[in-house]
Image (cartoon, rainbow, N blue to C red; front, side, top):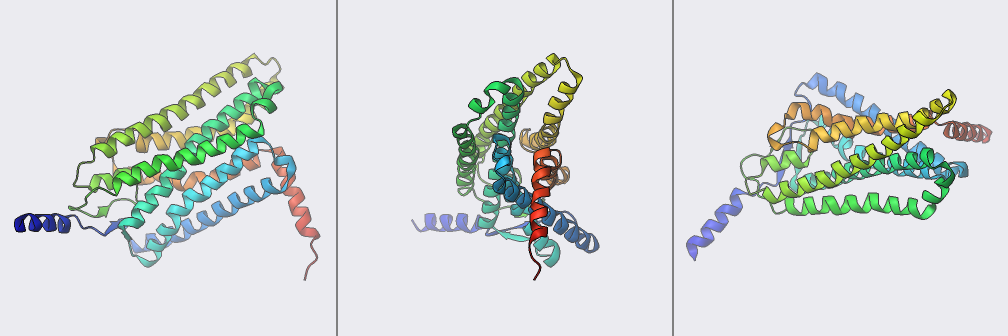
Length: 322
């Protein structure tokens, strides 16, 4: 019994890693200062643009449509995803302290994967919304009625929580004993699983299941929607009608191709094919770039939103100066 107790104690001491070291993006002090101000600017722009989009959609009843309801939720997802990674990155760039606690790392994984999964589902439903608007314009208000939109929002957020709750719950039972150095600027599932010295087969299996559900199903729904959209557009005889239909979808199609390609590269591939330096650059696309690009694309290309911004600006100018 005494020997067994010693062995258990040894195993516990061997796996008692309480914090990780994030290597970040660079070791150069001069480059870290430059990156700090660059990412600080990007973060301010992203938060301001998304909150402006949310406020404008909430304020103007003309924007209370299914499409803008989905964009409203997309802005919430964007705020969540960029707020999980950038503030922590800014802290490490400014203070040069790259350590993060074990539970802090798990918390970061929870929120970033929740945001990424929710955005995948949301973008696929946005493609379905465009399909309903272009292919069934007379029945659009029935297909995308209020109950359906609320149901879509519930699916987006709840399925994301369930998915990542399973992953983080399994990761809490893993042991980390050999190394605590993560070659990334934030904690992610592949990088943390790579450090574990215990059996990760269940984690990898559940990750593959999530890849099928989120990657294949959302991508399948998106491609199917755009197949019928393109078929309907090519049947339109007037050139003006085709241009209007394409202008409605091109911005969303650009975001989808940009976002899906980065997610598929990062998550839906064999674990032996990871190149950590390239992965850090690719992850900047979906964790930093898209939260900035999304509100600009979905706002600047919409006539209704431009009119709402003009009214909002006019109302602010009418306020009496103190």
